[in-house]
Structures are given as C-alpha cells and as structure tokens.
Image 1: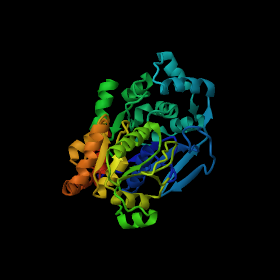
Image 2: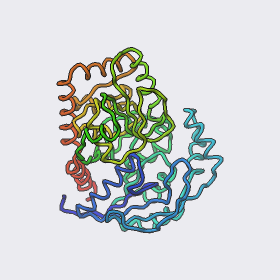
Image 3: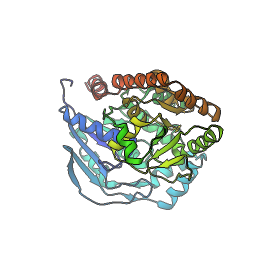
Image 4: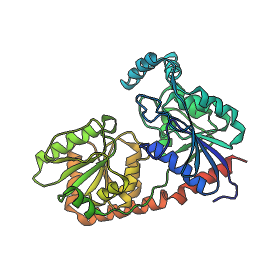
Length: 392
C-alpha cells in the first residue's frame, strides 16, 4: 500500500453481496479491499435491487457490510411516463434531441436525500467514485460533488454512450477510471474525451480453484461442453449463441453440449442445450474448470469477469469479434479465439476439440495474463498510484 491512506466514498445505485452484475461486483470488491489496505471507505447507495423497476426494497438505512460502512437512501420517480417513453426510444436506437436527452436524465429515478448528503459531506472525503454511468441517479450524484468526483463508467458501445450527458459527465469529472484500454479508446473515439487524468485500473479477480469432477457428478454431464455463464438475455447476445450452436450441431456429429448457467428470458428447448439456472460461485468455478471452453458472445463489455475467471481455471475462451474489450483480452493474452458468424464459430470450436495441447496452452496463457494484470495487488496498486499522482 502507498504511504497515504485516503478517505474514499463509492457512490452507486445498488450495493451488497446479493447484487449480481459486473459493475456492482467491481465496486463492492474494490471498496472492501481498499478498506482492508487501511483506507477509510464508505459507500452511498439506495434501497434499490432491481434496475428495471427501481422499486425501493427498504431495509437498513446504515450498516457495515464486510467492514465497509454503507448508507442507503430512498428513490423516487420524477416523471415515470416521460422517462419510459424516452428510454424506449433510446433502447430502440433512436436519436434523441439534446433537450430530450436532458429530459430523460431529469425524468428518471432519483434520490434527493442522497444528493443532499453528498453535498453536505463533500469535505469529508478526498474522492467520490461514482459508477456505473448509464443511470440518471449517477449523473445527478456526480454533479453534487463534481470537483471531487471520479467516474468509473464501465462504458459499453451502446445507446447511452454517445449521449451529451455522458460526454459531460466524463469531461467534467475530476478523474476517470477505466477497466481496459479498449474502453478508454471508446471514450476517446465516441465521446471525444481527452481527459488529463485517466487510469486503466481494471479489477482484481479471486482465484477460486474449480473441481471439474464435482461439477460433472452434480449435474450428470459427462460429454464435452461449451459454457456460458451470465444473464440469459439478448443484451448479452445469448440468442445469437443459441442460434450459432444449433447451426453447429446440425453440421457435425459430435456429442458437444452447450451449458447455460444463469437466469433470464433466453431459453431454447434442445437435447444439446442444458439450462442450469443461477449457480453459486463455487459451482460456477467448478463448471468453468470442466468446460471445453467458456463462450462470451456479448459485444457490450467493459471488462468481463467470467472471461478472467475462466482463465484462472486454465480454460480458454471464445469471444465475439465485434467486442473490442473481449477481443483485446484474447489478442493480448493468447488465451482464446474470436468468432463472427457460423463459419468462424465452427472453426474455433473444431480447433479446440482437435488440438488438446493447443487448448491447454491457451488456458495457461490466459491464466498468466490474469495473474499478471488482474491480481488484486496489481489493480489496487494502479488505483493507489493514480491517487498519489492526482491528489497532491
């Protein structure tokens, strides 16, 4: 750890060990480990657990979660109908006028008590880290303490990315943290952001050993299989993965299966596809250790924890060519292959099946890449070094 302990506040719409999601895990794990290293860390969040309904779930106002003091505040809708109308246009890839973009931001779910607390406690912290970017609440919270605000956007190439409020949020923040170089390049190209204080920090990943036989015995899966782990939704391109896998099976005679681990609306009845639903962390790692490869078809990622976790298990990954972040991981590490369309999809799978030694080498290259770049010591040191440079 650096010599100077800092007073740090994390601001995020939802928080806690029961909250699943890449950005949420990133914030919680970073906050906890910075506290363990001697920094004073507090979290400011809401009672919300569902970012679709934004329903206030109630619960404790203030509590310690793994030694991090966590404050939660109520949420209210400003103009639910107006927000839904504009949000629907955004999701449909329609262009909003500048006024409509500001209306969308103003109409959404907000927390006036949270904003007031941030303003009142502005001098209590060296830095407020706000994340992730695509929620009106995060924009308004950041505006309350903008001169002491770091944005950790977890930026994707999606409808929200090119909005004027997103550009202003990153432009006006004191500093910006990114998960990968590809994410920072997206900010520079899509938003024309040339911020003087940015750092590619990433996130540490826990090395939890997996037991492949325990997984196979638990679910009676003894054939080779590809694994998908995450939300089963079109936003993660799961529908494409299902289509490609069905096409692949129609072209081959092997016994390869596709195992889906997670919850969501994308389901496909098929003798070749096994739906396991949500699994706890250890069973997820066991499944990764047992897989031929992990397949991550999403084109909207700012880091992708499941790729890093798969590599820690020594298992290669298959990613979509159109995702700059995951493709960058694969190219830099040598830990997998990328595909775009059925011909490439078939080729990368057959390559792994027909070349066991190549598959093992890819897995080991991936493991070394994660241990070098995404161990907690490396990521927290990058974070602390940036603070030492900027907070003089």
